[in-house]
Length: 248
Image (cartoon, rainbow, N blue to C red; front, side, top):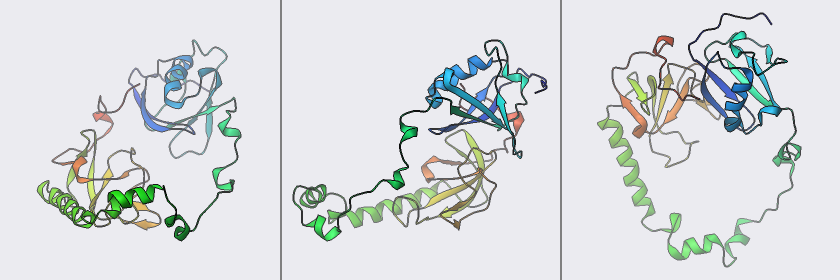
């Protein structure tokens, strides 16, 4: 592969493996061996077993990052652009990879009516101790919790179209405010859908086949109001890259 110009500036890349997926800042002057050493605690794959595949945005070509002398060859030889993906796979099969898919394993089931008649179960203990749904006051407490969550939305002036910041790091525009039945928690509680400036999200504004707001792939995220800060935050661009993102 022909070498590209090496830049001293760190580049945000998406590091993926079978066990994890995260955004990391990569220094092009690192050698392949240095990169693999830093990826071990992220992926759980020993450097000697790592196979690195580079995937550039909007391209369907897998580019292998490898060299005979990985101790001296810098990764800046490859075309590293912001938010390209480095997929890390293991050349050595693990014991877990040899197991059959969980969906193919036969499972023992029990009718609910039969389970409710058993003694010494977690359900019986919760019923005796009035825990969870067996607590007579649970519905009222949940109603109060939902009201508090909506109050926080109003007090923080969280409305569609407002600029915001999430966890003091990621920026975007509020695109949805309301309940999402398919997500955990009280069904009437508000979720805040944000269209992020950068592709560091988890969706495109849809969940389980139902669309709640519109945004590009991996630029959508849904959080509770407690994580949202509304303000006149400028849109992030490459010139704004700094210490906000997790570094290796």
